[in-house]
Length: 327
Ligand code: BT5
Image (cartoon, rainbow, N blue to C red; front, side, top):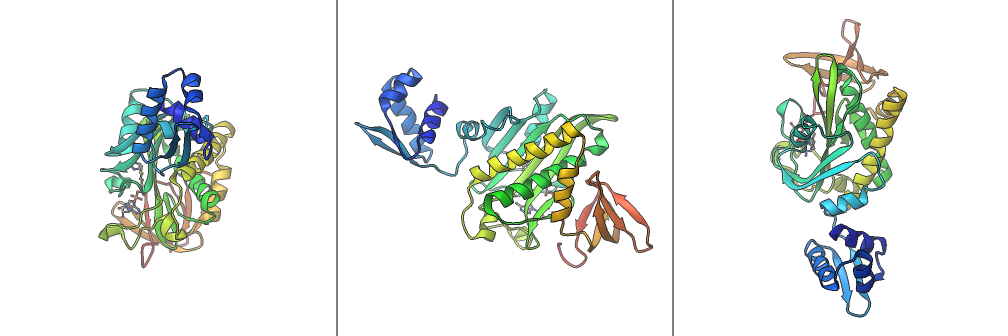
């Protein structure tokens, strides 16, 4: 019910909707309408009430709720089910649990805060409340386990396009999973899967974006930044979320339906900050300095070793660090 009331107010933002219209349209008493409005106000919605004219939504908080997400994502027919949390340990962890229980492709898990957000190799992902987008999507593509890193390329391409569309800033990709601006990381992708030796049962793609973060803990403050810090202004998390999921849908469905990564890889190449550069690749205990030549059609990094040998590196096996600094 709350969702329906909120939806009506949002559809008529800036205009009054009469209490009568709400109560008869939704089949509930005017007293209960008033109670729902009160609860929306407590959540931060600025709603003007007039005994004669009804209710007018003036301003919405940049906050998420189950209702808000279901309303703003209703035009995205790829997102079938949404789980929203104010706080959680890790959306990827929760998504994997849901996927194991049979959750469908297109299930989205989003939390305002993560207390145990994860990066690759068990590293931490800092996810404070009210500032970022921390989310995971469950996918069930018919691919082989070794093709799973391709999903990271799709997410990276979607993030580049979505950020550009939302705030008109061009971001770079540090292959395979970092989105950076001015050599600092604004976003990371964590692709995980449930698989048997030859079959992928599910993929969970986790995306973290520092949207309005202003303070970072000491250990990452030199390597992390946010869209707000770059743009100098608050960025709407809702608008960015809508765009990210729209772009993800389009790149992912192109991959699934047309069996090609071309659109995603083109963006990954265009936005790559490492192609043509010397980079250090850390793979377990091994470190090599190579020149990054290209990203091939499977999303692998093509590199040239010191001895001239050209090899392909599969995403997910390696960490990239610059030769002398983070990039
Ligand atoms: C990543 O790992 O970049 C993947 C991050 C994925 C986060 C999302 S949020 C929703 C979903 N649920 C999860 O639990 N995770 C996913 P990696 O390349 O390993 O980078 C991790 C490193 O980035 C850390 O070791 C820090 O150095 C740095 N880092 C941590 N938090 C950061 C932040 N908020 N912004 C920028 N850098 C950060």
